[in-house]
Image 1 (cartoon, helix red, strand yellow):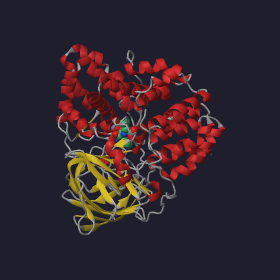
Image 2: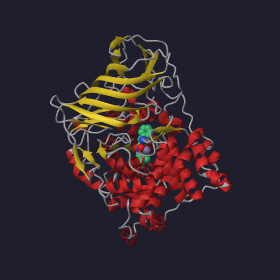
Image 3: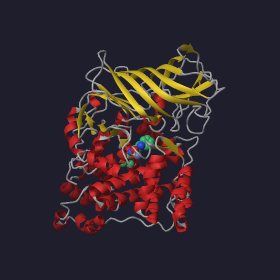
Image 4: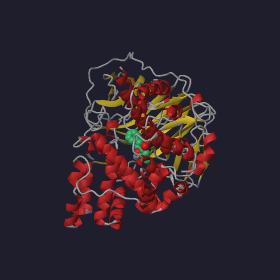
Length: 625
Ligand code: BES
Ligand code: ZN
């Protein structure tokens, strides 16, 4: 441990009571709410391609809205007479087809998929412009007041994955349609907008910032942020954006970024996106990181002070190949994005920090997977790599299955064919399918044709059906091990007993040793023991990973004196990965904790992003009735 987490430094208070969804829509409504392509989208992407987008938007912090236009360059098949787009929490003002105002229709509003926006076109249409504004409730957008950010200034950021892009840009909101984009964004000084694109250093004379994304991307990689932001470069192609008060620590934390980029390129070929910057968001960001091209969005909860949580950046960087370059065709194929990325992340970490370090990450990942599998129970269909999310919220597929089972499957293949062969295979796979989508079946075919068919025993050992199309881990799976954790297991009982010599022996332990130690403590633990440990190691004031694991254990051990610390954590941090286990533990720990969870949530909810709110409402609001 050692790096003291600066929770308090990035403290924000929740004051805004914002979200009530406008329910009155004046536009003509038609009765078509069917999803035409089973991909959680209304878009007719089989008939029409949208090749490029020109966005023009004003950021208005006061009214919490984006307003302006999205202009699409369209290619329609012959005979097609309609363009269907996705929108959600957007008010469409006007639609122009090749410069001429046109009537449009809106489908019924669906709570997850939003509405179809239906625009009459002819086969030779070229340009469709939608003039619109977003409602303050637009799900992708997190509008933060000055009180909610570390720098004391308002902040806006988007989170488009998986199907929230439609709540700030009318689009074909599915991974299969790729487009380039340019954008002009206006926001008042001192705020500066940034996008998943070439970011301008300055505004033009009228205060507009101009952006370009020249490589085609799917809609879920559209991203915008605006705030008082500074930039510091590590070299000519990578650097950090952050609010001024966070910059110093943020810059130090990611000093190994250039080395990570070199390691990634040495593994799987040149980086295709030109620039790679990381933007640190306010701590309400619901994810650890988001691989927005050229500009990863990151949670400040990885700012541990000692670089111990930078594997998250290796992960988002790895997505520049797996996901951003070769993209899952549908959310059913999500593991092609995330499983590959965890595998690649792990390889970057091993290359930069060594095998012993990477082994610790691997074992922690396995522990997460085991827990998820236990929670899911046997034969749960969501425990397969290939998911069936049709008609569901793709968010439901975001589990350790895609990430960790996906990674272990690839490690399994690596083990069968040998690292050298597997690396050559992956490098070619990325190059051959760059800027395209891939299905699970397509990947399996490619894997067989280009690797497994080389040797009859490969295919048999690969056990593809069990890994990809059956629940859980295949029989015979050998759990990973980390030598570094043997010492933790050995010292653990002595540490719990407060033995000084054991305490001294932990001097060189990293965040990962401590996580393994805390996870290994059987709950409920003796609170007297926990108190002693807290006194010596101050886990609740360590980095967010350690603090979170520790606070969950505290709840499970009914250590009620920790309540204020838990409240502080839940008020500062909006990252769903931390919220769900902590609120979840409280919700199951008897009346005192259940009530405490609800009291804290009632106060903290308005500061969380819609993604976190969605998950927590399910857990905490329904049960409250
Ligand atoms: N692309 C994901 C985040 C995501 C997935 C957002 C699905 C919405 C829907 C991102 O790359 C990610 O995996 N983030 C992880 C980090 C990680 C190191 C595993 C997270 O946020 O915890
Ligand atoms: Zn990811």
